[in-house]
Image (cartoon, one colour):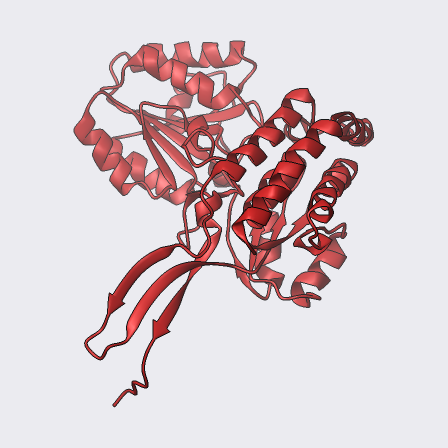
Length: 396
């Protein structure tokens, strides 16, 4: 598809989103009214207000202004036999994304896939069905206004059994599936999909307080990472303390009090329970693997940075990990050895986000190592293709 026509569609979409703002918010209200609010994190992700619509418009605008990622030359060489070998970026083809709650994904995923010449199948959750239908209607208006078929952007409203059947025997060729959600969703997709699956969305992020940490800085980072947005996959769940941290008992008690004042439930391991005697002690190892998406965290203790690294690599979701220390040598060793998509020194995990990291709108945060880890922006929604030019060469 020509670069110019794609940007014309996006320009139309910006206008349509602005003109249909009231209809979008009204559709979302129908979803909110039907939601039971038993899952606060999901409810928070479901809400669409004027600020969210502004964010959707901004996401489309930013992608429209980015360079087209398709047909970009990666490398070029001429071999001794005269063959000219050029490696260029190319679309995946058709991408399917499965997600819950967040109607803004319907905008961000579609705009990225479309500009990268991919068709996209949007499988949103039933809790956002009215919002998603309205937003996809906006996409279809923009496509038709510019003479393109609606099938570039499709909304799938399938139940679990129908989704399973579709994954096993899709009615069209699928090239990539991106499940954004928890362990159950990811396992379900991996079990039934017949094409490549890129894992994303699971957090369970760790922060390690090294013995040389600046305490005031540490408290501020923990509070931000834990309480700023509990529904985000980059929120903090586990806090590990170095056993050699000066004034350890006092700092544990201070942090516990601060977190409780912020309505965070603090669970502790056996070592920390000797100091925080009134806190609930972890009874099941499975808690260390759990992504909370709630005002809940675990405080544990390790003997040193190596033990912290081992624990993080054992239990974390491979999303984001932070070390708080004024020792840059220790920080660098931690960042090299921790197996996460994003590793931080003296900063909140909340920055693992396409917009915050300079990528722009994102399809998801990948925790896979192939083909990309971290925010999946426009440049990451292409694969590559070799163009080989010859003049009758044969291999002997």
